[in-house]
Image (tube, rainbow, N blue to C red; front, side, top):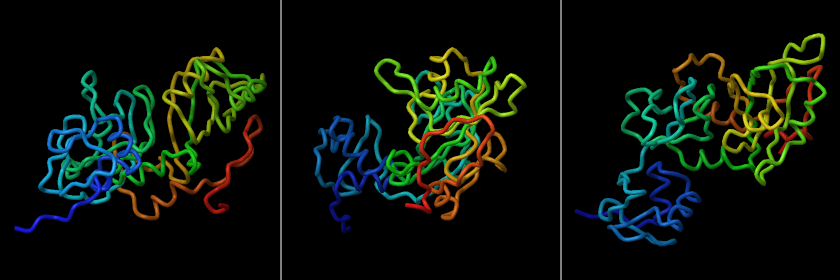
Length: 266
């Protein structure tokens, strides 16, 4: 029986839905990929169906999987990770049962205590596009604090703070239903970069603890209409909307960085 043609290892990993080609190159360089039990090398070619490829000890399927992207409504308590020996429940449990045979990964995570819109996909290149800072994909959050945040300190969220050598900041912050003292426990926050737990750490650094954090929109795609713990398979039009950032009306109490260009303006 004829074998498949040799392909570059990073293309094989991307087609199998493991990650993007660029991420695959990084994993190869870090020694996380092995071919026939030997450490893989950058630029190496393999023959699908003949060579045995593993990533962090797990075998990679030899046939390309279909490109499927699902928007899910994550509750608190689910981890956005494929593998964690200390936490069994992950966001991938929200996928329809018929998708269990495919390998999905998160295109932008939410921490264990946060909830809202998460994109799960088998398309490594799409995930890379969504997470790469150069694409300016704006994520929008509803933040609830344990005590009111004053309008006069909104600018601090945009200017940011340095914590352990890293700058933490958001692109826009606005009060929701401010009281007569021009303060509120509820804020609308936008950011397009995002480090792990950055919003929580930023508010904590300013002396305000986060009670609840919910991501309600990515680009122009809204969480509205997706019930808690449910998902929606995205069409090509839906996926395109992830890269479109509609303007937000000016709020009475807000601070914002210089507006990022929308997909229609670039």
